[in-house]
Image (cartoon, rainbow, N blue to C red):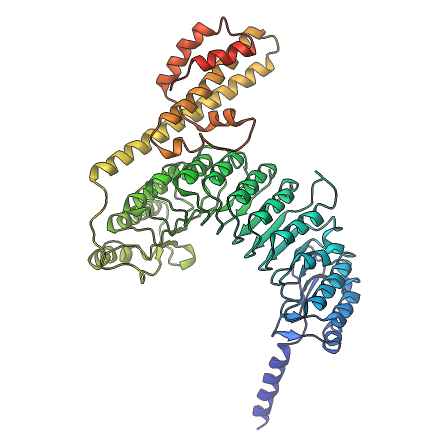
Length: 579
């Protein structure tokens, strides 16, 4: 009987703990004895009485560096009680206020936001999360004491707040409180699942432009259209430290892909890029992949290009991306009708470098048996190469490469063969996802001829070789430029000759690009992106042939003696048009 009573008491204690405040010591290497104060539990409408009870557990407010108010809804009296404790938290750095005014009348919610924001403005707050709070323009204005004053505030999240364009304009005005063209301290800024549209994106773009320390940015599922997308993408040019970009589930359009291609070329710290479902299509994606595959962006870890109306043509530059980004671990291509032909192109791209790749998603891509075989072959081949340096296979699921191919068009007969020939023999190093949504009644007939695949391979080889030559030539040009910089005794005539050489080659690359039938080589040509460096940037991306170089050299010999002024220089280049 006593044992039964003890069990009942324990159950009662557990139930009580659901609505009890908790203090958790933060383990760290600095031995600074900091603590997290959390109210997370079952949803509850706080009163003055329950709030006093919860906060009474705080004995040393100066040790608290993080508060979590989620799942508890504050009224005015409870907010006032909480504020007296917050003001004493001199080391408070993180405030999670997500979902903390749910169910309250608008007037009460606004006052609560103002009370808590005023208290937080007296701390050293670094991170703020006000997600899940149905904030309108008035809600943002209620947060003014905090948003428009804290120099230390660096990380902010506005997710699922129902933000309108007007609310985003208010956010912009508050975050830019330092003045026009004065940089913010922001490193992380997140917007997800709001209704701000293009107007909101245009407003937030002003914040992005003035945040040179920005490392992580998200504006996903916000109903943003073409104008907002193009403005926002252009703003990333001013973020040299950007590491993560997520603009998925909007309707940016093709031109945004071209703009991203331009502005991301020199983003050497970029690691995570999510541009899923923004309508880039082959043209916009070709431009973006070409930039990621040939420029100084070499540290990508995750690339999500799913649901962009892509075909196999838009993936021509994917091999360059793998070759250029040796740390690429995750590639998501879901919901693009690339077919088996595109799947084979992906497999050949992975062959360029797949040492780090541990997640490949190609669900609902219209892939049939041949496309699946190509993907399996490349992972099987790579595993055999790895076996030469590893004695034992690791059966830990965490170390397996995840390959997701559900929702494709694999006949039941082909599925059985794939199971026998590949999946069973690869289970020790590849974790295949479910095939439950596969179209087992699909025909195995492909929509391409064998010659098409042969031509694809030749096109890719030529494309990669041209880009290899281009990069080598650019390296040589950079070396020559450096040598000339250190040699101050060169005369103006020599300088002009070198300028002619460099500019003619830049023009030749652009012309060669315009003639090509490959979308990836003409994707940037008609971009509306306004940049004074556009022609020079094209020279870094667009390829050229050795034959063109020979023609340039021949023409150069006949022009360098007479084109010594800027006007003559431009005239000579125009006369060398290849179209």
